[in-house]
Amino acid sequence: MSIFKKIFGRKSSKPKVVEIEKEEVTVEDKKIIVEEKEIKNKTMSEKIKFTIDGKECLAERGQNVLDAALDNGIYIPYLCHVRGVKQAGSCRVCNVKVAGRTMTACTTPVAPGMEVENNTAELRELRLTIIEALFVEGNHFCPSCEKSGNCELQALAYHYQMMVPRFPYAFPQKKVEADNSKILIDRNRCVLCKRCIRSFKDENGKSYFAFTKRGHKLEISMDKEIAANLTDEKAQEIMDTCPVGALIKKEKGFDEPIGSRKFDKQAIGSDIKSVV
Ligand code: SF4
Image 1 (tube, rainbow, N blue to C red):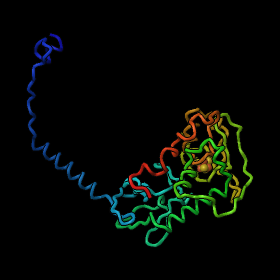
Image 2: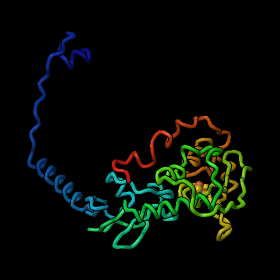
Image 3: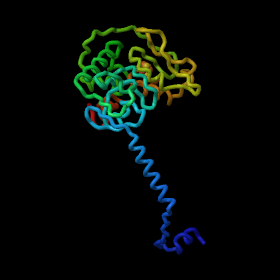
Image 4: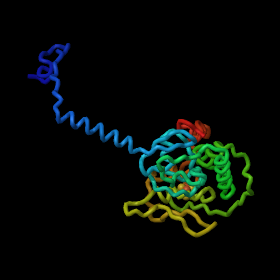
């Protein structure tokens, strides 16, 4: 007998409705359903309640304020944070206030009943000041940068309506390194956020990148051996992870026209429900 016949009982194009016997729900099944509900309710009740600017939010136990805010549709600006990667608190752009103290949202775990201040005039001013400082500390010539329009620092400057930084430009002498085949390192644009150091490690846990030198001479460098074996895909991933244009994939130049890039189309943070 054909499979068709076995299932529908005859060759007709109009299939016969086959009655499916309802399975009886046993006492054991009911017990499992009740247990599953209890586990779900317990997990829900284990979420931590806290507030951001008076809005009630829920967080997972151990979650940091920044991730919890984003999960609750609240945008806290940041530069160095990468979701799922160990936090560094290095850019300080995500500064919020908790109990009158300024702290970085990415490194602060949510505590029950915590009251977080985010969208205040004081914090907006503090973030703008940090962004201005980052601009004058480096050499950010946006019109000639391949990352323009996709650059998070530039997007934050627009977000906070930065005009001219109030600090004098430092015009530091920074080296451009172009001696590996896949990545151009332009230290003029590096904001020392450590995203690359924390995000890219080989199978032995060795980071692709590291800081060399100290103090104001601190600079990003790439492991020569790893750099020599980079694939195009990895080089693109590295370029996309760097918030600015310090790590540029080689042989890539303006293939995405200015005006159609990520932050040309939508302001940074506008994909989060409520923007500050
Ligand atoms: S190269 Fe880019 S990702 Fe690495 S520290 Fe500098 S700005 Fe951050």
